[in-house]
Amino acid sequence: MNAQQIIDTENKHTSGVYAKQTLTIVRGQGASLFDVNGVEYLDCSSGHGVANLGHAHPKIAEALYKQANTLITLFESFPNDQRAMLMEKITALVPGLDRVFFCNSGTEAVEAAFKFARISTGRKNFIAAMRAFHGRTYGSLSATFNKKYREGFEPLLPGVSHVSYNNIEALDKAVNEETAAVILEVVQGEGGVYPASLEYIQAARRICDERGALLIVDEIQTGFGRTGKMFAVQHYGVTPDLLTCAKSLAGGVPMGAVLIGANIKNLVPGVHGSTFGGNPLSCAAANAALDVILGEDLPGQAAAKGAYLMEKLKKIESPNIREVRGIGLMIGIEMKQKVTPYIKTLQEKKIIALNAGLTVIRLLPPLVITYEQIDHLVDVLTEVLTSEMQNAE
Image 1 (cartoon, one colour):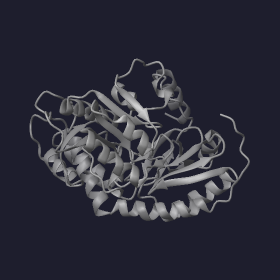
Image 2 (cartoon, helix red, strand yellow; image 1 turned 30 degrees about the horizontal axis):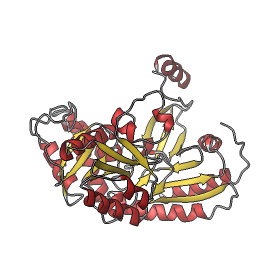
Image 3 (cartoon, helix red, strand yellow; image 1 turned 180 degrees about the horizontal axis):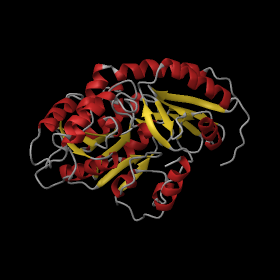
Image 4 (tube, helix red, strand yellow; image 1 turned 45 degrees about the vertical axis):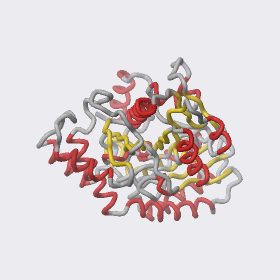
C-alpha cells in the first residue's frame, strides 16, 4: 500500500474515536520514526511515553522472537519462568512493594488498584487531583479530571472527588475515615507537565497514614526512567501502598502492573484477574526491557539529557513562552496561546511532539535520544517558537 491507500483504508474502517494524522508511519529505529516514503522524523512523543527504549530495540526484538517460538500465552494460575523472573526483577525496584499484579495497560492497572484499595480497607471513596489523568475506563475515568474525557459517560464511579493539586491544606480537609485511597501522579503529564512539590507528596503519605487511607501513585507515564529515577516517586523519599505502571514496562509491548505493599490485604484467589495479564511473551519483553534500562542506566541518561535539554530550552528568547518545566525527559513548554499550530508546524519540520492541554507542548523523547538529536530539536523549536504563529486550531 502507498500512503494514500493506507490512509483511505483506515478512514474507511476506523471506529472514529481517533483524530487521524495525515502522516503514515511504518518503521522506527531508536528515537526516529519513518513514514511510508522513508522520510525520517524525530519522535518526541514516544507513543505517549511508551518508547523509553526507542523503537525496534534489538534486545526486545530478540526476546520476543525467542519467546514466541517457546510459549506465548499462559494464565497466571500456572507458574512460568519468564513471569517469575519478572516478578523478582520488578519488585526489587521499589523496596517495600513486594508483590505485583500484571495486566495489559495503564487504565487496567488503575482499575485493579481501586479494587485492591476497596477490598483492603472496606471503604468506598477515592480522592484524586484536579488536572489528573488516570485512564479512560470507568474507574480510572472517574479519577480523571478533564471534563472532555468524562462528558457523555456519566454516571461514573461514585465516591470519587478531586482536590487542588500541590495543595496540602485541600488534601488534608478531603481525606477522612471514608477514604479508601488517594491517587496522585507525581508529575501530571496530560494535565500540563506539573511536578509535585516534595512537601506535597510527603504530606500525602502522612495524611493517608493518619486517616487509615491508602496512597496510590500513578507512574504510568513517569515510570521506568522517564524522570531520571526508575520511578518518579523515588525523587520524594516516599513509598506508596500501590504503584501503577505500564507504557514502557515491556519495551513497547502492551503490559501494565500494580506493585503492592504490605498494607494491601484480602487479595485472595478470585478477587481479580486478567486473561492475558503476565503472559510469557509480554513478560519476556519486560525482562529484556528492564535489563536494558538498568544495564544502560537509562534513568541516569534521562537525568543528564533532560537537564541539558531544559537548560537549552530556557535560553530560547520568545515572548510567547510562559514557562518551561518538567523533570528528566518529561518536559512541558507552556505557551501564551494554543499550541495546536506549533505542533503542526513542528511535524512539518519532521519533529513529532504532543500537547498537554491547550497551551503546553509536551516533550517525551525516547531516553536513548542522542545529544546531536537534542541539539537539532532545540534548533527547530527555537525557529518555531520565536516565529509568529496564528492562534487557530
